[in-house]
Length: 363
Image 1 (tube, rainbow, N blue to C red):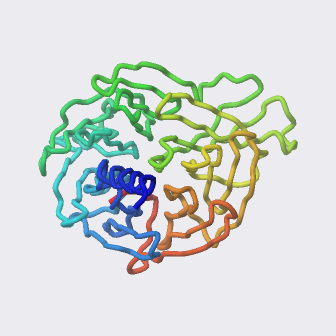
Image 2 (image 1 turned 180 degrees about the vertical axis):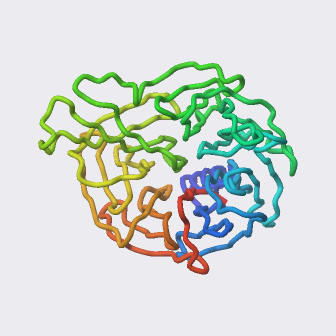
């Protein structure tokens, strides 16, 4: 063996030894179906790997995997509980019931886990039950330790504005982003507001209030939250096609930078979007159509019609495949380059997915 070949071999072995788990890990999809089933999907094999029956009533909603890919934290019990499911054993290893005594609380979409996997952040909307009325209480982010077991209690409650539907952590854990009518950057330790980026309150000349509907979390590949918005030009005739505009909001978790730019006159309904982790100017969006947008040029690149409505989507780590999901019982697989439908995975029993999330996890 020559010295060059030997050196190359030693380098390869050294790279593997640095992170053997990463070398052996594989990419999976996590989603859910009614009545109360968590589903682990192998997208490369185009098949369902495993299903997990969650105890109790109510279809799953939000899903967040632990950073090591071992636990899936799922909102269930009619949005009233957070459970942690061990993806190897299928056992419930964590449970937090959001209600307490005469306080009834529900989660309204916001759900996130710290980068070290030690804390989980849950948006909580409570009311006090009276004799014949509900007394609305202040909303907040309930923070739980993930090692708290099956009767978890909040470690602390962070104040947050109403209508918060998105919670996202900076990669270093130093900031928590709360997406509501605006985007509040918070200190995750005490909830102190570090910065506010205006969205609905943007005060943009000749524009009305933008309509933003961001309730799906599927940012893990690029660490960027992307969400479509719709805005009306107040300086144009209502019959002018340019009066209604569609744009893309992005939030970069590493830098905290927020952008809002229009890319077309409104011509299609869009529910949710995801950024390509390899070509970060590419954003894919879904509802009745699948669209590809270039945020570098603020132009629509291509759009194809889907066989039915899909609410949410995600993308492979290599940026080659887009997975559309939600609504009924199939995951459609599309080429990120051509938007050609290249595969489909049907979920067990034909049970529909509803408004659930679709998450990517390395295991």
